[in-house]
Length: 151
Length: 209
Image (cartoon, rainbow over all chains, first blue to last red; front, side, top):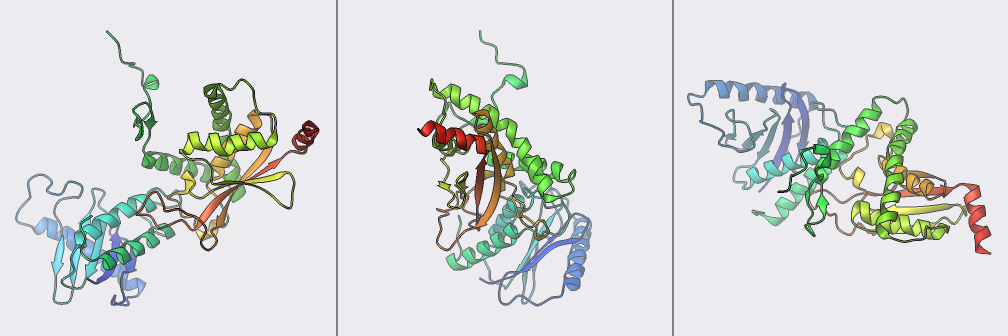
């Protein structure tokens, strides 16, 4: 159960947040992160267009349909959650990590609490809210300590 | 046949409270968003931190006056407070309880100045979700609450200057578990410094005799 990184992409593809979540997280420079963010954004959009099926209705009650949701790779598992406002929360972890969905949803809740209710946060800008970063750290620590939990 | 009030201004604000069906409650998120907008509104119109704090204080002042009227009426006390300690007790217990559901965490008298008192709140409602950026230094968004306190005191005849300060919590100091468990525990408490005008103190010492 090891999380690697979190990154958040805004609706125009710009990276608004990135954070290593564990000791194994790769050390990536800020410019690289920006590139990763916008590449993922484009791939997400292309996947939505390239999909042969349009899913009827919204299978996800509070997210947006279509687009990349999961990537399984040899040394990596990636999960993406896109909100209705086209903000994408992407989390990466080592294979075999459970609870990624839960963590992703919790991070979304933390974003709405700590970033959106902060009068000093401008929408679509990089998130500089100390409360948010701390809350994310506490969440990851809590999940890793308590193991797979369904709260 | 009763007619439900059709005018939106006559309908009660918010839904049922947690404790009783007579109590109305508004969601904390709704308040947080509204307050966030208030702060942003003022921030776009000021040029300095102290001006922003002053604007927030004046936003809260009117509320203080009305809260005093409302609480005095509802408590059915026939006498109004004339002593300093009593009005401060009223503020830190009754006003806090009616606004935030619990009395203020402590009321202290300053050692250095006889005319200064401090009301401490470990979890002020206005700054639950706020992260003040480092370039705004010592700004306290709780200035709104200090405006409310100033309004109550002024309305009761004790003119005072009330300012809000964010003071870092010392090791092991309270924070008896955040009411919102997913947020990290607060690193600072809000201290409302109440500085009474000299004539108020003179009057109060005169009454002591």
